Image (cartoon, rainbow, N blue to C red; front, side, top):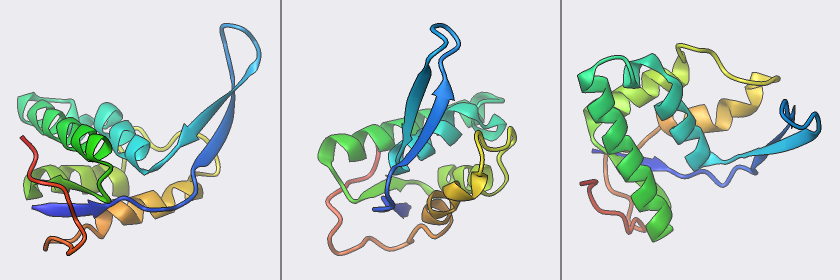
Length: 126
């Protein structure tokens, strides 16, 4: 199992053009959004049945961490490995510029702990 510490990095704000209304819109990016973004967009997690099963488990783990207000997302090693590869070299690249603003979130995934942190309240994903 891997424990991905949810970083306290400030939320990133992207101002994007709303194509439908022609007005600027704001996209707020935080640690859990970033995990979900990779989970939803990277081919490693969406290209075949095994990837889709990993994607479902990651989605459940993020939802559980959010519901429990946990400080960690707990996922199994195989799913973490796919997520780590997606973070370090996303198949579709990163949206927006400068992409360097995503580095704290990339590190958050790459540096996931193997042992349960003492303050962790999360349990294994279902």
